[in-house]
Amino acid sequence: MLYPAELPGRSAGHYSPKAIRRSRAICLAGLGLIASGLAQAQTCPQPAQEVGRVAKIHPRIEIELADGRLLKPLHLAPFEATPRGATQAARARASVEAWSRAESISLPARLPLADRWGRILTPIFLRSGENLTLHLVSKGLGRVGPSLTDPCLAPLLAAEIQARTAKLGLWADSHYAVLPATSSASLSGHVGEFVIVEGVVLRLGQTAARFYLDLGPARGSNLSVTFTRQNGKSFAGAGVAPDELPGRTIRVRGILEYRAGPQIEIFTPAAIELIGSKS
Image (cartoon, rainbow, N blue to C red):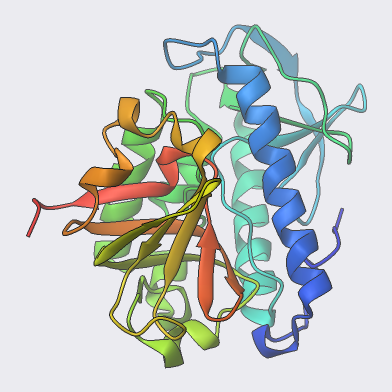
């Protein structure tokens, strides 16, 4: 199943503001389900209920079960709506098909409600306990999507770093490289896409409702990261207190938008990785 602003065949330069808003809405919907399904979880969900074999793998790496339920792997970032993204999604889909043929799959005991498209965002396991998202990320067939900070995220990020270092899968394509926050040329080619950007936080700006992180001296051409004060309440507890971020090198992931300059709006502290010590 394909969703608005996720259709293949459109270059990044052809994204309309409306399409970008739709991509952002998809991201928000997913984060809302994650919050509802995992906010109370203190440990990483484990396989608890066997659900049998897979009926169909959809193009967006959604798994349809024989009973009609549609599963979306938790922590798996979307493939952007470009020819490259469509190719990478096809490779991931083939890997999932081979993975799911090995044995029946299992799910955690508690599942969130389905989203507006009928998808259930959840960890997906083989009966042996192997996690699908970890399987894809470790082979370079997917990137980690931001979600609630929980014990499941650390091994996924570690696997992503290993795959990126080894240039496995999509990491062999420079299009998917971690982007420098101060390169307007690099950023402009990815508007409307899910990206990972790295840079030093030079300034923390605040309004009554929002925080802004400037990752470069040239406002309007270097990346800014924004999040609401309400969402920011959870940041300090996750070790990324906003007032302690200036001077830190961070890696941020999310949908790249253009609002008087390149910008990523984040909704969870898990969208930020702290790199090294404070400069």
